[in-house]
Structures are given as C-alpha cells and as structure tokens.
Image (cartoon, rainbow, N blue to C red; front, top):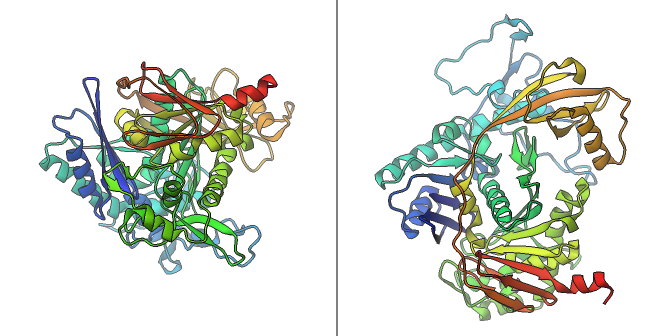
Length: 552
C-alpha cells in the first residue's frame, strides 16, 4: 500500500508491505506529478496493490486564482448571487474591508428564464452545446442559494485545471508501473481519479484530511478513542477533534474566503508552520505568519538564500532541532542567528504557540468539549516540537508522537476508507419526514431558527438534538418543534488494516530532544516520554500535572 501526500515544502511517501514500513521525503516541485513519482521512487515502490494520493492542486488553483474561464448561469433574477453574498461584513471590526472577489466576474453571470417546480420542469433552460457544465444538484443539493451557488462555481472553475493534472498523473503512473491512484476527499474518504476530476471541489483539503485519518487510526492502535490531531507543517497548522474514534465532520467551510457547502473533515487551519515568517508590526509587536518562506528559499537555516527569520530557525537556535533534518537537509545555525538579530527565539515560539492554541480551543472548548478528556496526537514536520507546551496550556496530560510523525498524512492516505457522501434535503417538521435511515446524520433546528446542528441518526434524533443544543448553547427547549433540514449518509468501504512495526524501547525525561526518522520531538521540562517496545509511538506524559493534581 502506497500513500503520497504533496505538501507546500515536502512531498511524503509511505509504503506498507508485509509488515514493513518505508518512508521518504522529497522537496515539492512546481509540477506536483514530478514530486509524486519522485517520492514513490524514493520509497522503493515496486508492485503496488493500492496507491492513494493527497493533492494541493485544487487548493492552490483556487487560492492563486488560476482556474478556468467560467460563466455562472442561474434562474432569471438570481444571476447576481455570487456578488450579493450574505450581506455581512468581511471583517467584524474593519468596516471597509472588501470581500474576496468571486471566481466568476459580474459580466459572466447570466440569468435565464427557466423554472423547476416540485413536479418537474415548468420552463426549459437554454443549452450551450460542447461546454463543460456543472449543475448545482450534482455538487450541493441543499437549500441556501448563495452557498450552493458558490460551491458550484468553484467546482466548475477548478474542473479543467484539476482534470488535466489528474489525467497527466494517471498517465505518468501507468508509465512508471504504478496503479491508477485513488484521491483523498475532503471528507476523509478516497475516490477514483475520474470521480475527483469530475468534481475537484470535493478534494480541496485532501492532504490535511488524510492527516486526521492517520491520527485517528494511530490513536485507536494506542487504545485512545478521544484525541485532538495537531498537524504542523511548513506553511500551516491543521487541528481536528476525534471523538469516539471518529473525526469530526462539517457540512461547510471557507477556502480563500469563499464558502463551500460540502462534507469535510472539521479542520481548523492557522497560518503557523515551520516556515512561517517572524516579523514586527507597525507597533513593534512580534508576529508570526501567515506569510511563509515555503520550499524555496525556505527558512534561513536551509542555506538556500532565505534571510528572514522563521519558526524553524527559532527552534534550531533553542536547541530543539538537529543540524540535519528529514529529507537530508543540513541546517546552518550561523545564518539563523543573523536572521534573528534583535529577536528572542523563545518569544517567537510563544507567539506561534498562541496562534495554534486559538485553533485548538476552537475545536474543543468552544464546542463544549473538555480538552483534558483528550490526548494530543502531534505530527507533521514541526508538530512534535510544540506539542508539550500546547498540551500543558490546555490541561492535556498525554501526547502521542508516532515514529512516522513527519509522514502521518501519507500514512492516512495509505489506509483511508473509500467514502461517498450523500445529502437529501427536507426542510420540514421532523415528525412529518417519514422513515429515516438507521445510520447517518441529520441537520436539525428548532422551528424559527436560521441555522442547524448536525446529530447522529438513531431511534430518537430529536432527543439527540436537544442534548447537542444544550451542550453547544447551554440550554434546550424540549417543548419546541424540531425541524429536519437535511439527512446525510455515507457509503463507506473500510480501508486496509493498519499494522505498524514496533520500535526499540525508549524513555526520556524533559528537557530532551528525540530525533525520529521523519520529525523531531521536543520533550519539555516536566514531561516524560516512553516507548515500551510494543509499538512505534512515543507516549509523552505531563508528570508535573500529576503532581499538581495530587497536591504535591
């Protein structure tokens, strides 16, 4: 089983074969398909039964506005949806801040005299032969016209770009003797190349979603069902809450300031990574990110021409990184010292930690979860360097650091489920909805509310909704009518079983640095790291916290 994840700085590969695990990292090239094949070669991929890929082509094309020339066609009178938006502010306290421009300019938005009612077509739509057409019911078959329109426009905008990439990747893999790769969806499942090419918006956050899948599977191997994943790479940090062994999922998210009404792993992302630039604002306050040094030139200590200080440089100066890191990169301390002239590296680490804490609190405390009931799974090239300090701030007493921390997203790709999500709209009183599926989720709200909560389907979804509403908002009105907005189901084919080789026993007391194969772990004072020889995962325990709880 082969998994290849393309990141902003490195492309990672994991090969699982007969109980053996092989990993590799190669620098990400401008043409991602070159990086995919280079990573596969580096890991020694030969006869492969299953090949899964996580890509950032769709994300980059949207953020950089390099999609196709697209037109938006809607019912007459609704052609300005993309530009009218929701009439809310781009920023609560910046009254003049502009919204991001839609992917379709106003002059290419058209209204046509057509109409569909409950019983079918009332007035037929005009046709444009030969055009690539994406219909909204194929992508986002839900009410709320702006989000539906935005999702459909983005999907069409990305289609030709992503289809060309995936077609080229498929041909290159065939020539290299590799099977056609599956593509990770944003919802945490995988799809065929043809499915991904038809609707690329479903794969906008495929790489980060794979990291959550890997974190959940690894935590389960360690006997932990409740965890928070911390994926800190070179450009950003992604966090997600895993409850009862399942990653949290959301029905909507924003990418580049534009809404997408699609099932996704409920990730929160902040612009804080190893390559994030450290700088001072106009008032002299120290800031970190969101600008990143990227793969080229990279942090100053890479010696590739970068001169601005980054988080990686700060960790090197604090003794938390070796002189040679994953991917064979030699780090130059003297260049890092010049970049940090007049800046305290410890202060930079405190600032970037504060950014990550904001995201961690959002997925836990602000959603009614006590982080002390969870373990923190730290991965990515930089995640294990910051995990102990972040966990202590949240009251988390256990941190899991896999030996494969630097390539856990690629590992998640290799073992991810095949998943196809479906949604059916209702918008009616719950008692009038009729028989519902035994498994899945329901979007429910009190009559008169504008927004809904998603709860598991079961024998009594109304009771589940009351409990969820009370947990989120502090109250429940059990005498009020409940409306069913939508039902969400998924067809899931379980992925391969994950079996990781054991690693040598290890015990270290902080402060200490542990050099793993694909990442580096920093054990803060008051923490103890233990690997008992029955797995490859390093378990960190906050022994100072235990002392505080005992009154010592």
